Length: 81
Image (cartoon, rainbow, N blue to C red; front, side, top):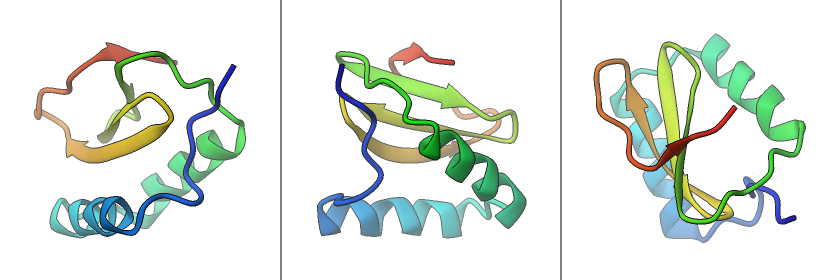
């Protein structure tokens, strides 16, 4: 099964994610939770997905994360654990 990839992201995608984290003022402590989850090697589902961390959500498609949302913003795709 393919894993969600956080390394070797295409540069425009990486820049987009960093911009959203900055714009949406995601705290460093929350980014540490994301980092721990990423290190666990989560399985990449087919299609669109999102992971809810409570104070923010990360959304993606297949192996790649694509954006970061704050609480109250509606995610797309299927929720993953």
